[in-house]
Image (cartoon, rainbow, N blue to C red; front, side, top):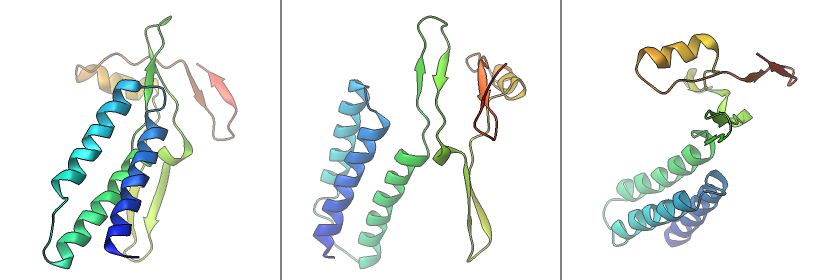
Length: 142
């Protein structure tokens, strides 16, 4: 694949990833569109060693991965005043790089009463646990 095709493919992948992550949030959609476009415009005329260009292509891959797997989006429940976060399987997986046997933990610690108290001690917003899922996928209410 040519360099131009790789860049355009990466640009389209980032736009698809942002659409998935920010669905229903017009402000985030607009700001992410401007941010992605600004980064691509900033590097529009990059020339230089192939390692530098390859590094920029790697940054596209990493940004896409972060948007798809590294961010869990929460929404404010107007009735309760609590934020609700729907954690997807890709947010709680642990991948291991077999070549080096280094764990690339992409784990999200579940919110429990114990973890919620950690946030309180640091002055973060209060987290209220309303329910959690068991490993079997059955919903349990706390």
